[in-house]
Length: 120
Image (cartoon, rainbow, N blue to C red; front, top):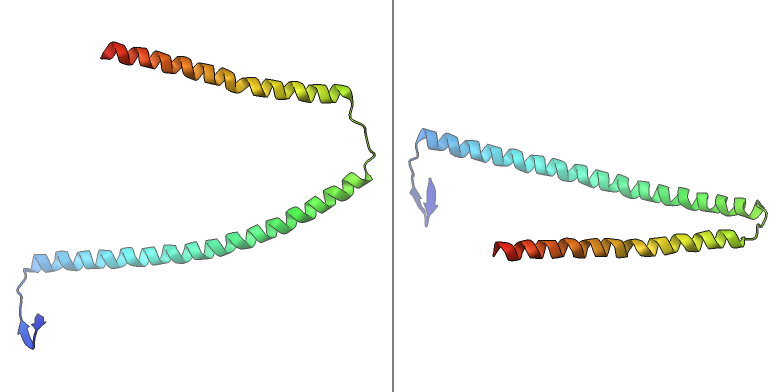
């Protein structure tokens, strides 16, 4: 029944159509309620996450303070020339790795270009 300007209009629908529409309505309601339930769970998890972040921050700052106190009690050991040299050698090796990767990428791109040219 539909009202338009104080007049009632009656619409006839088949029972099967009525059941399908009712089924769709119920499925939509279920989906809406499931979404609402998930949203509430997300809010709870978000609150717990922020609480855990605060707790972790406090624990990390406490740990940092404890480490600083521990380092104060350790004797000072001068850095040796050998230790500095090994550190520099590692940085040189690290700087060379991207070049090897870049070269390999260029080779692969060139091979791909050659294959594309042969296929054309």
